[in-house]
Length: 126
Image 1 (cartoon, rainbow, N blue to C red):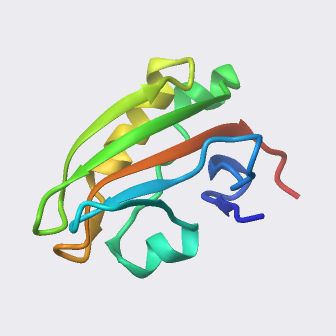
Image 2 (cartoon, rainbow, N blue to C red; image 1 turned 30 degrees about the horizontal axis):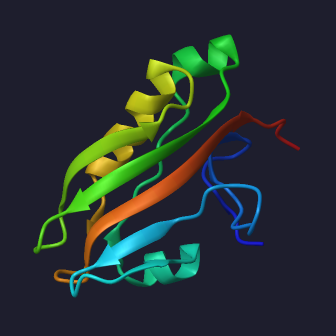
């Protein structure tokens, strides 16, 4: 089970890659083929992939949710557009994810599109 956690107890978690449960990260490569990709594989092609901070308003309101976001990637590796495929249930969380994904930069010429499921949760810090 792959899981990437951002933050120290409160933050953004990429959903586990499970066959029947959660959506998976998938990509359309520059040559046109599509496939699922692991977090590790995606990070191999990342030049910059900053995490979304858990917004202060979301912390106060203890907002949680699961969203799916599609990144459009230009030939130079820049994210040009982020579309909410499935909302996390709150505009604050969706906007934080979109803002972070717009800062992503990948190796040029690898991907044209990436679909990423995201789970927002409040986790106690130990």
